Length: 82
Ligand SMILES: [Zn+2]
Ligand SMILES: [Zn+2]
Image (cartoon, rainbow, N blue to C red):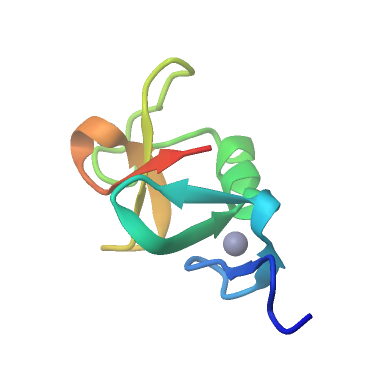
């Protein structure tokens, strides 16, 4: 079992089980762990691009610039799928 079923989170560089990651829809190599997502949720779901809150029904994307965080899919970034 060498690295099977694991993915590396692009935000925190941790190796996590692949069922505990979020994937970016158009970026096959990108995985972001649920832990990073949940800490963003706890921090208030602020969009890293425009600074306003991402509301529940809105699509979420991941940004790697200017810092690693989440935000509105409409503001750019990598759209997430679960
Ligand atoms: Zn992570
Ligand atoms: Zn935004």
